[in-house]
View 1 (cartoon, rainbow, N blue to C red):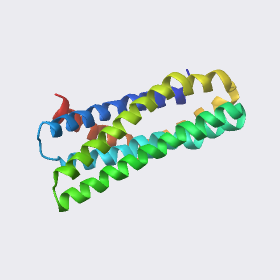
View 2 (view 1 turned 90 degrees about the vertical axis):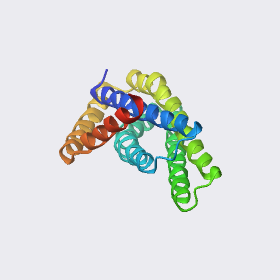
View 3 (view 1 turned 135 degrees about the vertical axis):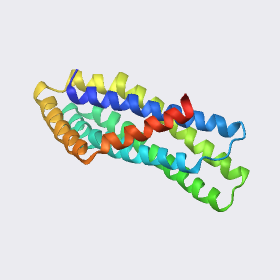
View 4 (view 1 turned 60 degrees about the vertical axis):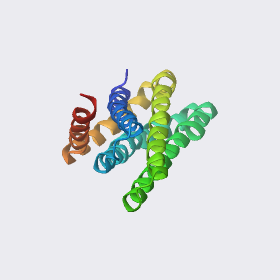
Length: 187
């Protein structure tokens, strides 16, 4: 397995950990719990900063463009009309969740609580399926179809990117925040 793919799959595991927290929060909301505004905002920050900007950023900058360029129409359909559309759908769910949270702060109605629960679970469900597709279809397809030289380019760019983000403290910030949320909701 290529280094960049291994890192992206590890990030998928971390994202799935966050999705487990989202699911637990939603279950508590169904049982009548108050909306945990600050925790949901931490989840939104994790999604935007880690899952989207950090993880999807690497896919969108390094892996997907090379797949489309080198692998032809099948990769173009898979990436452009599949993975990238799902990235945008996830962004829309997160924006809707944030909007519902903002509205709930002003007017805490059962309808807005339902919206919070619904958009959080819509995102969680979408991302779980998305991760499964990438791990079982997209990444193996890329590894079978791209050359060693192509992956050297992807790996090199990913390593530089990872090192820059590590120096900025990006990975530590989000994974530490995730651990705190896991302790609160999953243990």
